Length: 453
Image (cartoon, rainbow, N blue to C red; front, side, top):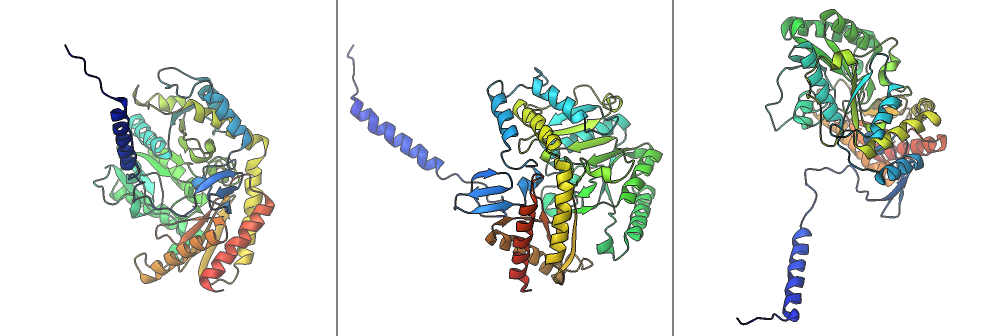
């Protein structure tokens, strides 16, 4: 049999051609065009309150990854904990083998959880934690309906989007959505043209009317509410309204589920946003975002008795409670505690709110400057304008223009609100007084550049 030899020189060009073809195919890939970038910044590295772009500019980051990097970018304690854990084990699927960081995180988080909430389920995102809370509420009560509050944001997955009313962009175009959801009024005093007390009375009456017309009380599994609206406008939910919801859920044998994904972990100057309402205790608490300084992990906490009413095996997930994310969570909670970041959030937030109100006093295009801790919103336009009107569209245009003008001032911010007319400011909990002053001045210059004041 004749042996055939192929010259190496004929193979190499073919190999090079194949590699070049593969690279050319790969180079055609790009991020989805449906991802809308809020800024053109490409990060080279970041530290504390600052993002250093590949363009050589230093940006004061008042977005913190939408409230995620609570201890600032790349806090050395968090970096060290993650680095060390990566050298031990990265992925230990926690329903297969348990790992030490998750046990430590549970112990540490337990020091901050409301009394009685002593059982925790971990997932990757706020949406997943919200959906796990819905599953628990329906299984534990044997009831089908979840009532959400108008303006709430609870995520983008199908069930979470079904619970979200912070804007149609989160839920439109892929219906039908999950059934068994009803929405009750939010006591938005500005939009309603009422005092806060009048708005609360109105909203609670609307809740009672909902139970008389749409959701029978004996079919109500839970009320889901953010103690501070996030994407819905960055505003505190009135304390008397939250207390009223608590009273009604107890009266009707339903659960009160608090979504602390954005407001938790010190963001509002207390560790949990609902702690501003004295005596309020949820049946279920959801947290994510700031718990691990940028690593993806979320948690849903309830009492052991309540958890035991759900079906065995109904909780799980491949990546939930990841070992590296859990280690970062332990480090994050330690930093928040040791460095007094909850108190820093309160004090720096008061400075920022006072500074913004002083700098922007008399700007007629702004109808409200509000904030609690380091969760602040600046609302543009007439709050009573019809949501579909040209007046509302102009307010949204102004907010968007200011957000973009901030980039020219090397300040990063975001917009929010159902009509997009609110600029939200979310500094890291480690922000300094000097950085607050710098951010205030830059924001004021951006506003004046847009409105000509």
